[in-house]
Amino acid sequence: AQSVTQLDSQVPVFEEAPVELRCNYSSSVSVYLFWYVQYPNQGLQLLLKYLSGSTLVESINGFEAEFNKSQTSFHLRKPSVHISDTAEYFCGRGSTLGRLYFGRGTQLTVWP
Amino acid sequence: GAGVSQSPSNKVTEKGKDVELRCDPISGHTALYWYRQSLGQGLEFLIYFQGNSAPDKSGLPSDRFSAERTGGSVSTLTIQRTQQEDSAVYLCASSFREGRDGYTFGSGTRLTVV
Image (cartoon, rainbow over all chains, first blue to last red; front, side, top):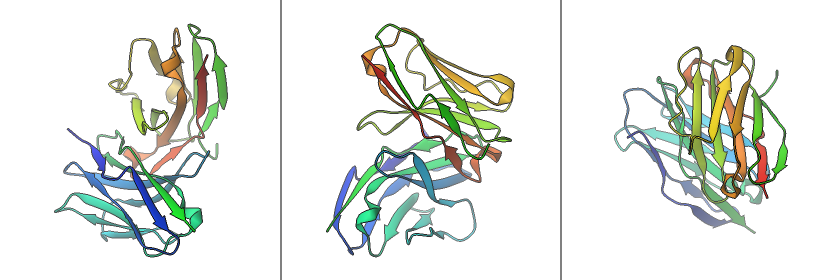
């Protein structure tokens, strides 16, 4: 079955520490991968996406994710987090069949 | 429009009543999705429309839920005989070209069944 697994439901870190939010997806011939962020009481915003080409994708606010086909992973990383990064993060995958699948989400909490 | 528009933003209804939630996708987006977000439950897929194809209804939790998309644009999600467990935020998203450019979400409708 096609699915997305986010391995951690909660990730607490201190400010300026590095963070990795893990995401694994079920294999498919053609797959598009996304990370969305949901700040408290707000809607989902696209953080970054992988369609093809370079396996490392970056967002404008310092996050990056690496597509690893052999490990079917798309982990999200940031070398130094800020309190403002506190949010829920959703990993998603699409395919040429169109349907979009999401993981259950990871709540990132950054402490001062 | 500039984004995905959902209405109403908040809806409080009595148990047993029917409700209709509306989604107006981005103009030109051929795909439209409905998701439900309950506290601690992540994003639950409900239904997916792609162009003129038959919708993927596999995520609808019961026959009380239905959705339609008129003219390939606006979609309405209808919940009949609402129950308290239907309380959630209902999110709509749309995309172009099977989502290669990403999926744009609306702000959602917060449904509370009392």
